[in-house]
Length: 262
Image (cartoon, rainbow, N blue to C red; front, side, top):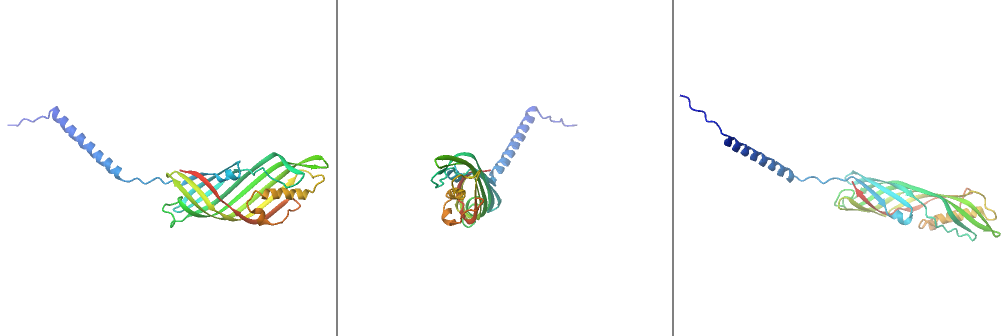
């Protein structure tokens, strides 16, 4: 005689479903807690864009930027450059001549450095802390102004075209602060260099009644006065007949920049 098969009721199936669902939720919770307990590595920002503050103090109408890229644990490469204009307040030290209105002005700067962040001096990897870096930079300035002068009570004028090129090759010591992981303050503390200076001045027409060569030499001397210590280091070399003076001397690079990492 066969025994009757016991059928499972709706309430029984419902209870089993609740148990299975509860076990599944507990399992997902354990997995999630396990994943959350694994520390995630901090995001590594290898790029930094910076704005040069010092150039704004020396050359008011300038916009120079730096881009720094981490390429090794304690090494970076930096490219820098931008627009820059030569200061206009030039004193010719000539009795009857002066510079009047500006007709054209422009300029630019480009360069690069390769930084070695010193692991023995820094607790963090690049771009934090003390660094040493060889560098090369180039500056070009161009200026056209009206030169006015008086001879025999008559006022004359001519266009004066001035050009300055500067090449610097040297090394620098600096420190970069990183604030809140994203922001930086970069200070080049000391950056001596061997530098080549090229000054050129040319008049659109000959000057009546005054020495043209003496006037151009006064213009170049006024340009040189804008660079610290330059006149004391170059001596009395004089200019060529084409209104050019070129020489090797010493130079310096120093600046403070602020930037953002990404």
